[in-house]
Length: 71
Length: 409
Image (tube, rainbow over all chains, first blue to last red; front, side, top):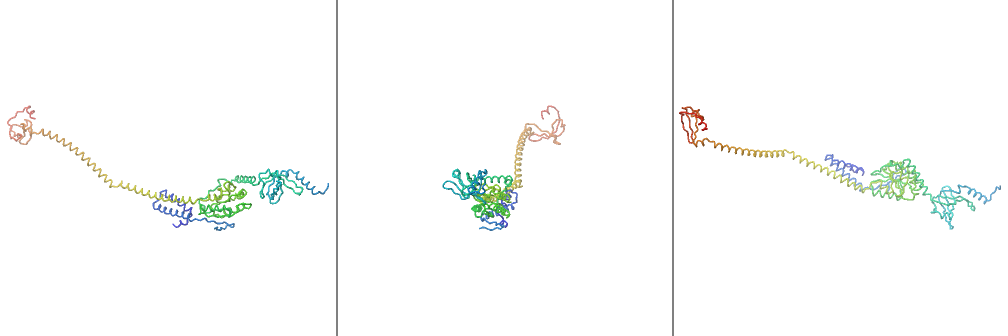
């Protein structure tokens, strides 16, 4: 599931929460549970790596509406 | 009447006009102080001016000594006194008896008036306040790009939530041009459209320094933003109109940055918690299924025909044992009864009687027992059975006698 690498922190975090709710409900067939678990693990790793590698980006909004990256 | 005044006469004439005017003898005027001098005599001289005019002011020592504080050059003040003419120089002057700084009283009244007006309009209504986004992608900031406040904000964001992107719309935050620039910066950020939350902020300063944030236009621009606005101006104790108009008031710029973002330390902790929940949720699922399998196995064992057969076999054994016991008891009883009969039989054995001398008589022709004398006519062949043999005989005569029959049997 390569889409996970494109997820934002909050999307990955929110999906992880949903997955846990689904697993907690206990109404899923075993193979689905296992698949959800594996996805949850990947989402958790995605969040972790986003936190580890994040660097604040700062840009300036010019009067003409252009954005200028600041160092 | 002489048409021509001497200079002195004209000056006195003007002086008299001025001193006769009640309004000019009890006047309050506001302006900015310059050319402030305190002479060795203790008298104070300064000029009061605004953008268009100026007036010389004098405060005699007696009045000067009563003031709590004398103004400095550049101060905006309110002066009370009387206008009069200094004849020697031919100038009119304000003879001041009281001065107070303009900052406090009037600014405060202005503040209260504007606050009451906007409050009445509903601009500060708690129902207008929008909740802040939990995970802001992009944080718009309207402040001075060079100020320490912006550095503070960036430091907080870098520490707490480096996932965010910051877009700064630079603006003056102090002085007469600041309000218009702040309004423009807010509008620019709002028009940009990519911000999830906007911070408008400025570091600490005097009440005059912060005055741009008590501007009506700034307050309205904050309220008009389409995304939530956090206002962090000055220090803990500084309240501005912008604070009331914002969705959230922060005591300082750094606090505004904190309010705008989740703490990544807490996020890491929350993430760990979530991951643990994930593990335990799937563990529980597996455990439940293992339990279900165990339960099923147990049920299966209980319902197995083997068990039924075993049970049936056991029951048959039980029944057989019971039957055996009953049978034994019954046989025992029968055996006892039989013994009793055998004894009785033995007692009634005719051979035993024969030994005692009695005989058994039967008809020779058919073996029927002769019990009554009447059953054997004379001439009939009879067999007389004794205990050790038989005698064949023939009846010669008979004499039926009731007594004999009774005796014999």
